[in-house]
Structure formats: structure tokens, C-alpha cells
Image (cartoon, rainbow, N blue to C red; front, side):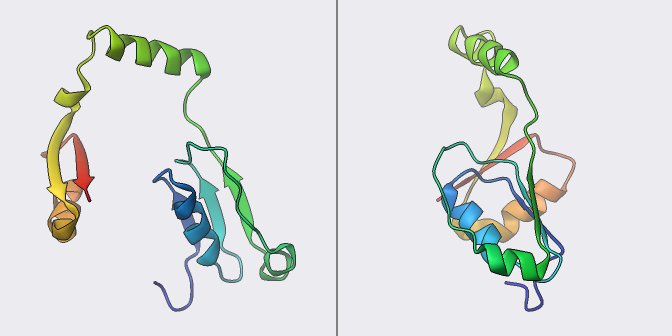
Length: 114
């Protein structure tokens, strides 16, 4: 994707394939952040290559189990309608348009459909 490799890769998509891609996009000094993964699947990491390339990997999570449970309860009871949070649904074939919409101010959440 980037010939020399990125300085930073943030995995925010969720599937384990995104984490695997993140690990493949390494160069000397690349920092990886796992943010979106939602599964407990494993992936391979070449320890020697990671060592010699001086890569760093960390993870971040922006909520607590209690807050997550409360959010789910609000959605289940209908007190929060998440459909109202989605301002755009754009097919993947129009990804360029979706990126423009996401860069603009006139949107809330943008869903990209396969």
C-alpha cells in the first residue's frame, strides 16, 4: 500500500484480517495500535522481524464493561435509536465518495456497505 511502509497503523475495523494486514504493513520503527478488534482470534507475529525492525504494538479501548452494558441496554429498550446516528449509507464501490463525506462536517456516522 505504501512502498516504504507507514509510521503508524491504527486498526479500527474489527476483523482479525485487519490486524493481520496491520502487521504486514511494517517497516523499521512502525507503531501499530489495535483499537477496533472485537474477537479473541489469534494472529502470527514474527518476533525476530519485530525485534530487528524495532516495531511497537499497543492497544487501546475507550469504554468500560459497565458503560458497554448500559449502552446495549439503552439500544435494546429503544431509548437510543442508533439508526438516527447514521447519516449516510454508501456502497463500497463508491468509496471515494464515502471518504469525501467522512471528511466533511455534514455527517454523523457513515456506513460503507460491501
